Image (cartoon, rainbow, N blue to C red):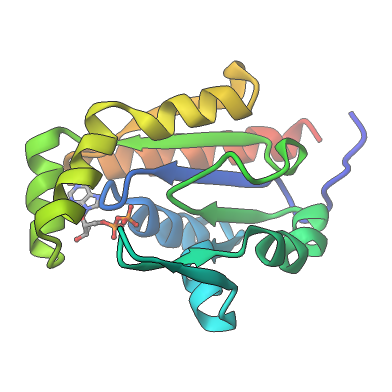
Amino acid sequence: MENLRPGGPNILITGTPGTGKSTLGQELAQRSGLRYVNVGDLAKQEQFYDGYDEQYQCPVLDEDQVLDELEDQMSSGGNIVDYHGCDFFPERWFDIVFVMRTDNTILYNRLEHRGYSGKKLEDNVSCEIFQTILEEARGAYKLEIVHELPSNTPEDMEENLDRIILWIEQWKASH
Ligand code: DAT
């Protein structure tokens, strides 16, 4: 098959906050040599914001600015993109989509430890219970490229890393 992405595959790592996206994404980048892109950090750094959400007490992401900023490097390939949403990216950007999943009580504890409380804590745990991000991913990408990854224990993390590294090697061999 013709290789349209000289830099390697583009991987989306999505899921509810606290499910382990950035831990997995950074480690994966180290092991694979692909580039780690944290969309939340990028937006903060570049102030890609469009207003403020009073209800959730956080700035609103300017999606168009994010897309413009990333378009060229996504076309070249070799990116691991981390974000807790997935339906505003162009479908063509990604070769595979991983949705991290964490059991409710474990997630609750992680987010509490992060300093979340009240509505913010409840909303994020509800997001996981109702598998909001999984449904979003299934609605935005071909079902065969969307994979759930359990992310409860360090063993899960290791298994996920091994599995994705293997997938990257296979992708490279077949492109
Ligand atoms: P996210 O980027 O999705 O918000 P994170 O990578 O910051 O999540 O992880 C949140 C916390 O949970 C952090 O302290 C690391 C821990 N963690 C993540 N994945 C884990 C796993 N599979 N097993 C145990 N702890 C994990």
